[in-house]
Amino acid sequence: MGHLQEKLRGFTNNRWLVFVAAMWLQSAAGIGYLFGSISPVIKSSLNYNQRQLARLGVAKDLGDSVGFFAGSLSEMLPMWAALLVGALKNFFGYGWVWLIVTGRAPVLPLWAICVLIFIGTNGETYFNTASLVSCVQNFPKSRGPVVGILKGFAGLSGAILTQIYTMIHSPDKASIVFMVAVGPTLVGIALMFIVRPVGGHKQVRASDGTSFTIIYSVCILVAAYLLGVMLVQDLVDVSHKVIIIFTVILFIILLAPIVIPVWLSFSPDSRVPEEEALLARPKKEGTDSGATSDSEAILSELEDEKPKEVDLLPRSERQKRIAQLQTKLLQAAAEGAVRIKRRRGPHRGENFTLTQAIIKADFWLIFVSLMLGSGTGLTVIDNLGQLSQSLNYDNTHIFVSMISIWNFLGRVAGGYFSEIVVRDYAYPRPVVMAMAQFAMAFGHLYVAFALPGALYVGTIVIGAGYGFHWAIVPATASELFGLKSFGALYNFLTMANPAGCLIFSSLIAGPLYDREAEKQAHGRNLQQQFIGSIFSGVLGPNDPPACEGSVCFFTTLVILSGFCILGVALSMILVYRTKAVYTHLYGNSRSAPVS
Image (cartoon, rainbow, N blue to C red):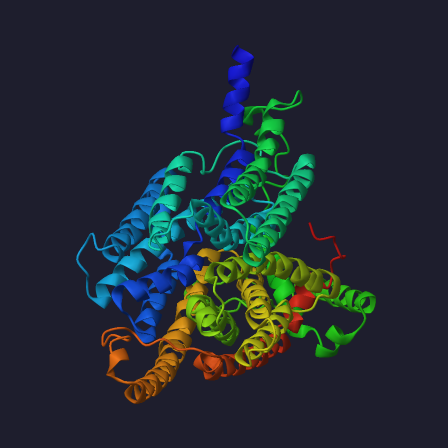
């Protein structure tokens, strides 16, 4: 009995249990991706026009991106308390919106609705912070796979929640707002005592490779299964029982990774965390800080003294020349012939603070390129409901699910292919972001001209391109500006998302849509004058005009395509400026397989 209790205690403190629970938490955390399904309900219930709806979209994006509240609380409070705050904010914000939409609460001014949307969506930043901070601390040697998988499940959550909503099969369209208010809240409360940093062995173990392979397999399986299910439900008239079966299978796949912590905890060779903590102590714990500082200074001096043509040599010759120059510098420094310069601030590739980074051109190239790329993608995501209706697609939810799935696949693929670029070719990672932005420009134009299957192709290309940004930008920021202040740098860069959406959605997409809708409404009124006054009440004076046809978003999408091309140009400028940094970081290392 005592042995079983020891195993159970080891299971509850197993870092893989925390990781799997964080995956489940992230599966309900991406409620912002459901705004395309929620916005038509709010628009019809509150008689909003597209410009007012765009402002709600900006409030949603701000709530989704402003994460320093969650970051600060997670440092002051235990992790369960931070998760509880996020769950309550989600319930309060979207719960009140549901009461207003269903007529159970009085209608509030537009600014108040924006505040509620901001509060509700901001709750997910607490889920993201708790998941990422806990798992990065539990897996300090596997931060890349951990962050990529968790961010991927956040991108998939829109499709997962949409499938659950389809299973509910409620005739009340406002029930999707209720589900958004209640579902993530219950998941957050249920997991708030599991998702946390735990003690024990945190170095790489032999079983980690197999465990991550299983997790990656589950990720791909979930994405492929959801895509197949959504297409079947859209193209074939399936019964409600079949939809329930589809959803149950989805839950089984999502629960499958629990076998990893179960096996690791209850297998015969498993160890409790206290025993694991004694294993594989990091070597060189007492490394002399002075020697490290001198070595870094020598490497920095090497970058200054190295001729530019060295970077253009073949890898073997480049490594030989760099080694020779480094040996000379070390010998000269030891003899006092060379005085190592102590610079006032760090160079690219070293640790920056936020105040040091924001005065660098490279940082703003990343920010503006991200704003142009992800901002245009987010504009399409936020207006997906109206876009699908204008192109005469009946089921809006299928496109919300598809763009969520391809967003996830874009994050996985972006991390994978950009890692190949830097590891195998020592080439700057932002070149992959430039490729994604070029593909997004094509996707915007394809939808603008309403070509065959426009919205299907558009959601695939734009969703994947949007996901690429969020796999590449965090890695690029950590490579150019270090890990010491990575949290502050990343949270600042995420502000590019709402900034881009504010420009593209509120100032471009919304006004242009409303202008075309008013033109069409005026034309319909003229026709009604010829037919007779009997039809004069079909369109109420307070009803927001609806726009039909590709003309509704044509100009907007062409403009967005142009901004993506500008993003390509900025990304390539960043590539040119950082070639030497990536050569220094990856040019001297052998190619390693991407895990």
